[in-house]
Amino acid sequence: MYRPTDNSIMRTLGREFNSPGREAMIAGFHRHGSTVSAVTPTDKEVRRSQRVKVLAAKGVQLRWSVDGRSVKKGVDARSITPKALGVPADGRAHKVTVRATDPTRAVRAPELRKLLRGR
Image (cartoon, rainbow, N blue to C red; front, top):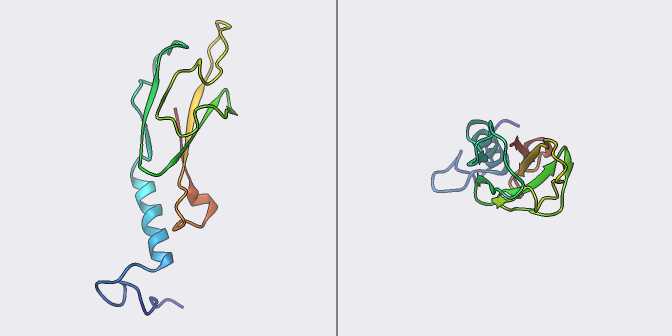
């Protein structure tokens, strides 16, 4: 039960890691490294026409939300304006967030696929 598979690097050098080993490594990378980071400062107000920019790890999927509601516009956009996301011009403050998920097949556990919620 605790032994490596016959064809994994845990048993023979020059091979790939087995599925549980790959999943554990990917989960570790996500625990210790940021999958998405804000380029636009998060401590200041952003105007509707001002671009909000994030850096995201290659391959992750991005989903934007306004005031906690997911929006279909801007899926996987690394740079977008609040106006394009549908933020209303009502003079009130609104919260724009982005969520990153890992679509790789190597991560099977749903709780590991949801990597990060950021602004």
